[in-house]
Image (tube, rainbow, N blue to C red; front, side, top):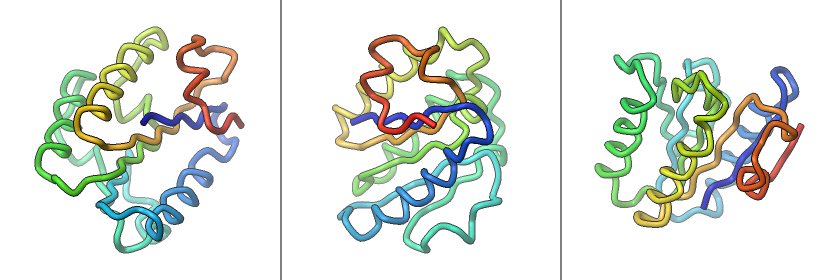
Length: 140
């Protein structure tokens, strides 16, 4: 399952994402991973959530980011959920037209390996395609 949290910068997407992931700890039976562009929110996450600072790794493209995500999924058979904060930054998505194909790849991974993805990105809901709008759980 893919869920999107969308809105302009500074509207509270990260705060909502942090609340969502911390609440998931009590209801999720598997492991949870939180990808971010820095370690700023380390102390806001419950200790059962694995924070990965994507900027610490030598990633330079969307393809490398997808390989990184696949590597995380492949090494943890108990992985249940992944949370992506600042998705456009950590996923190296410069063109908003590239978002939908990338989300569709993540959806294939989600279905094949039973991992849910919750994605926060700085895009206004009006900019999204109908497919992406159908995945939005919160628009700020």
